[in-house]
View 1 (cartoon, rainbow, N blue to C red):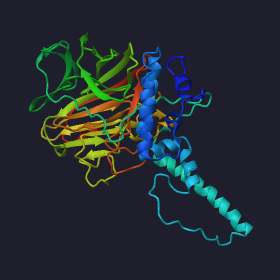
View 2: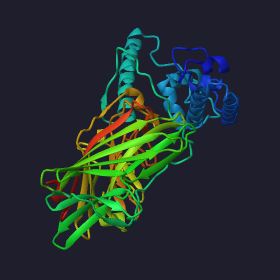
View 3: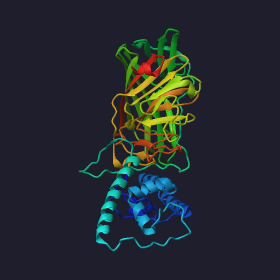
View 4: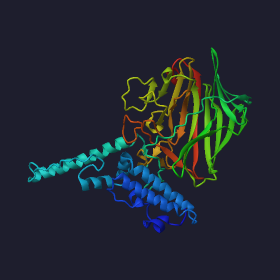
Length: 474
């Protein structure tokens, strides 16, 4: 609880102090309840009752319990998410044994009668069957973990059991909020001195006509100068206590530095007055058209109405065009146009608007995009990746936990195509979490809005005039 008052016990009669109540305990329904109308009625009854306690001096407790009711609503009214949740609570096997069927599978009208097992009276066969059963169970567990979790390092804390953070409620039929980076450059007053130079590429902060600053990258080639602007370079996704999700972006407030580096500072203030302070430091990285970005994001004056967030860095690369007119490279996922991929592959559908891939499944955390008409190519590399995660991080529901330190790289495909890095690592519009599928599915990952939670990541941004993505890889 967010204060010492135990609302679960005082208001709902749930007295287990050692852990948070399960969704079933929270709604006071049985583990086998599968009637959506009964579940919805329990949700509304609980929500109305808890909301009536607001103003009694424990508003933070009201907010937390409402948040968990929303989580229960999302999970229990979605069969796939409920199955994942029950597996985490070891309820799925109990329900299966009680009913002798998959509780979420269609029920057959014909009951089969079991027949005698051949050799069931012989001890040797019983012993052999027992050994084979143990082997099968072991292989089944290994297969489940292989499909349930991506390739990653699993860290289990032994001294202290991990305390799972709340899962933010998302309506089961609602698609994630997808925010495309801005596609139209605002009027620029002119470049601010100094310029950073690396090879044939320059990077400078420029003042916007209506105030604020942005970053402009200029690439010199034989045909002239190619320019891309980061437009609104700081962006975050915010989830509030009621499960509402929105993207917020902004410009830098101030810029300082010299020819060896720029420091850009900006902030995003939410409607609930939580302040997210961004500090981006740009420095030339060798002489190959590369720059290093060191970003930190601090949470100041967090509001209880703001629950979770993730941040994004993106570079617009290609003006209005079709995705098929570009060449993209993501190691192990995407090469050129991704022809002949199976329909379950992550980047198999060129009509998607978002392609985000967890870096803990990539051999190298890199995304690269080339404009075929001009040859302008840009790449982003996460230079200090940390793929550490934990067992409870599996599942398609949104996970809010500051132990996740991996990011995602990918592409936003719209009128202007942008390459991007998001932190922590949300994956979509397809994901291998919970197994491969042709369906559009997201594994949403966020960090809690707390003053002790800070984002810190280093990126390498490179620009070049290249005949192919293969040449830039060299």
